[in-house]
Length: 176
Image 1: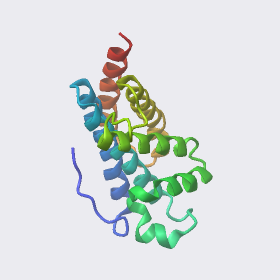
Image 2 (image 1 turned 120 degrees about the vertical axis):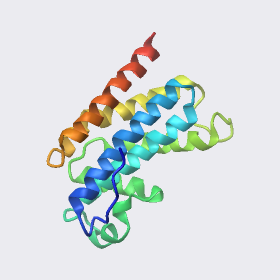
Image 3 (image 1 turned 180 degrees about the vertical axis):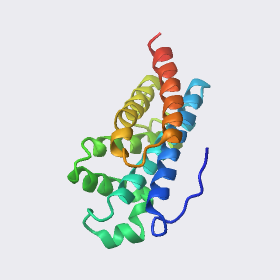
Image 4 (image 1 turned 90 degrees about the horizontal axis):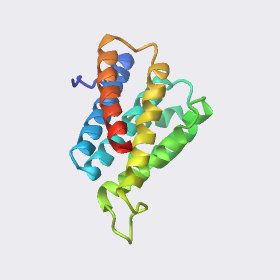
């Protein structure tokens, strides 16, 4: 399900909700891409989920973030080149571990473009990639309901349940 993405300046709650739907959708697509054999595309979708997550968290916390003017102009979109700084700022607000999530997301983004090229890739094997993919997905699924409890509704819960179910397939398959 895709929702119209309105400006957070118009409807902050709708923007956050649309981004959370994007997070869950991208995670689920990434899981299913991995299961179908597309490891680089899966890594890219998980990276996109992290970007959408940071966008939603920034929008939710616009009044609490330092550099509020930058966040109001650009930061709420979570530009790729700014994810590290955004994650540090969110960590200061109590989002524990978000900086580690972003670090893994950057590695997955790099893998999406470079694969296992020995001159560029930080990964040597698919198992290493899968480790980071599952770590990121598990961390998001563990925290997303709590982080967005005010925005949570039946639709989000439905997509969460689908993503969680598919994640169980991924982790079951990877341990057998």
